[in-house]
Length: 352
Image 1: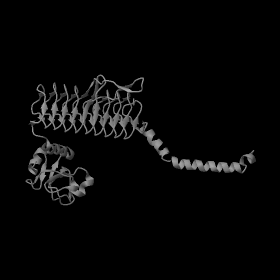
Image 2: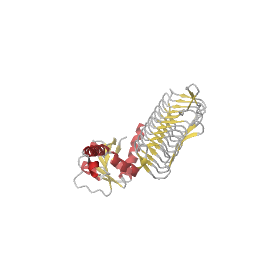
Image 3: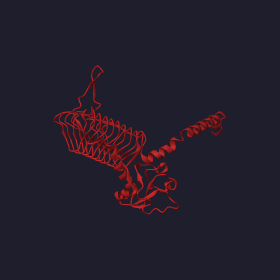
Image 4: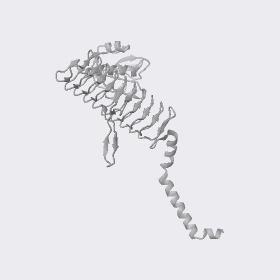
């Protein structure tokens, strides 16, 4: 996308200082700016780069007062971060596939495709599927029987959605996400062998959910595994059968949630956190990275840390002690030696 400072200022409702006809074709970080790119200054600690950057255009706030000359054309806006988010979305549209259905696809004749839907090469869509308008399906996506996909959804390459699952409006599923694989259900028999328990439920992903690459959401044994509206999942996360994750909860990479656990809304969960099955996590809970949650968190807004997870403040107090354990151990050993020496010298006998 080639666009001028004048056009950008109109899009952003900003004002231009400098050459309004200078053009850019993409964004850059302020410290790595090159000619033909647009960068931004939102954090004052990066101000020194504003005087060095080679970017052609620089977004700044309306209140910014430079202390040295700036060679880049300035566009002054009310909110720099909001303007950057808007521009990144515009530039990102260039990488989206063209509208329409590729010829090398396998789409069942009864599939319902919404208006302006794109289907990439080698995609497979089984019977009974309905797909909403303006949805983008990248190459090599598989959509199983009777799946429902909402409007304005993006399914990146390699996404697999098993039969009977539902994806709400405005969702983004990154590469190799798997929705609806079997839950980990096995029953040992009298011979010690495992018998598979059929998993006949589904997965429901509500609106405005984003799921990172290589994340797996297992289908329910019965009923549904549910991701409520606004949930954000990072890459490489495992969500087991019959789990429910509440509205606007965000979970970082490599976390794992065992079966039938219920996580509340507006929770923040760090990377590599683990949850045992059949527990409840209250709304607004904050779970630090690598914590192991082995019991329900009943108090809303509580922060926990450690494995097994403790209240955040208690963990920090405990950590202040156990990081000193080697020193404390040496001190105890020294005291034991002193007591032994005193006993050898007849300290107890003289005292009596």
